[in-house]
Length: 86
Length: 372
Image (tube, rainbow over all chains, first blue to last red; front, side, top):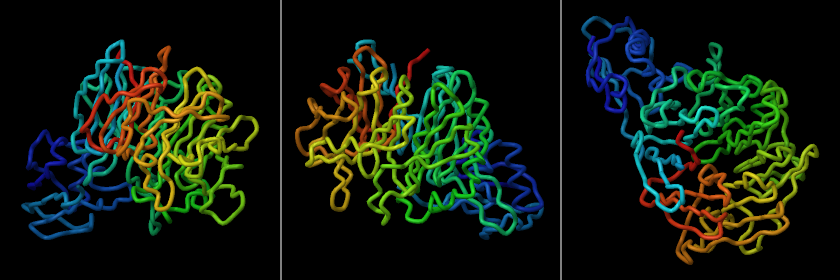
């Protein structure tokens, strides 16, 4: 499925704003992303498997906060860095 | 020689010629990322480690094996162990402090984090493991307060010092907790705070809970420790385990509060501090807007003001705990960076100062490095 990558994470995806990845759930998708782009998962997901404070994951435009959320073929996933900082 | 500068918006190198007069700034590296510490490995001078985090992304460590030409992320950055199901585990918010191990332990480094945790690598910073002897110590939560009353950027484990005679002998400071010591390579830890004041704790001589800002062990006289604490400047001579408040000899109107303390590489009686205003609401700037370094050449029996070249007025500097350092030249160079992005250098042991960089971002750390 199509995954949209925010600019702070594109150093992992060779500057690609959009990549293909697979998984039956958000957790599986993130594992696949990490296989393809080592290190990317830990920047978004902490060591307790929590989504980091300023990261948001949208599936087909809908926010999810659970890694167990199921995914289906053809879903579009947007990884978003929430506006923060200064 | 280079100064490695970690800032709130990336890292910079300051290169200087052999006379230590002509400075050149290069960078930024990782513009926009918070770089809390950037350190050279004295055992492998091409190896640099950098503690990095962005406003959005999790904390990590980057490594360069070619003195900063290129960088690669650690394949396993410092992280606390996953908590058992149903329990709340700790999460590293940022890597704050990096210390290389000794020559007999090539590849070993230590990292201190916020919240307060200790991590070790044995492969030059590529994979990091939690030091269970501290991170899982039954008293850790008691010692650290577990996040209660933490400072705005979080409580930090910092100033990791390895006894140059013995890699099993470690010290560190915690901004909530105090100074701690291990003699078994981190397997067990004990507080080392006797004699150190903690005027914010309603006990006469608490065993822990102190706020060391910076702890330094003298490399040639490792039985001597200095610390700049929230409650003054202290010295300890081992094996005795009592801190002596040597800051009492500082001028009363200046006081003995600050963040950094740095030592002369060859003379254990010489140390430099950068006092700050720790009165009323704690502005944490240079006293009266007149920045000055103070030096002792007598182990703290007396202190001398060193402000030649620094602004005589309206200089409201803040110098953080990792933002002061020394080199090892015959006439020792002393360097500090400010939160307002200036770097100041002295090539005559603090006698005179020169501004060598300005307009940089908020400076977190300054370390000396030598290009191989």
